[in-house]
Length: 241
Image (cartoon, rainbow, N blue to C red):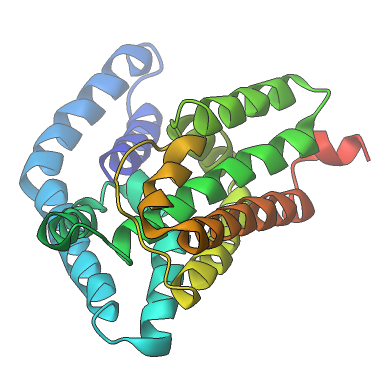
């Protein structure tokens, strides 16, 4: 929210200020306006919105049946978007509270885990679309850093926000994987790695729980990759046919 305000202010200030002064003073003045706005207004607003959204999503887990299944799908579809917006705090806290209280979680942490694999798939789909280009090499780096290192931010910002349409694949893949996880009652027993090793967090529930978790993750990754590839509209990829 602050970055968006900063960008808008800088563009308008560059138009208003004399050309000689704009390169130096437009960013400075934009920052001077954005900082107090972020501290006094945008920060509290983000916190309020995040808490309200988190509470609304978490309440789906108390409904049971189809509502809870869809709730896991919605969390998996939206988790990485909440990460970008900095609005996942309450959901994460509630998931951790479940883990501390009963030692397992079948809702928030499961949806978040599926969402991570959807981010892997988005990066993979971007690489397949851009292979043979400089951007393709970057996308491969995003894929490796996410699936091996558990760091999805490069893929989110380098692909998702840069090209926009990959976010469709991220959401669709996450939702489908999340629905499967909710339907099969996948349960997380450990909150650990955000890489491919995250599958180990489900081993405590036995073979069936682990298998269904793996199916959920692979569904999220495969569908996110396919949808990202299919909906791509960047000129670089299109020019390669």
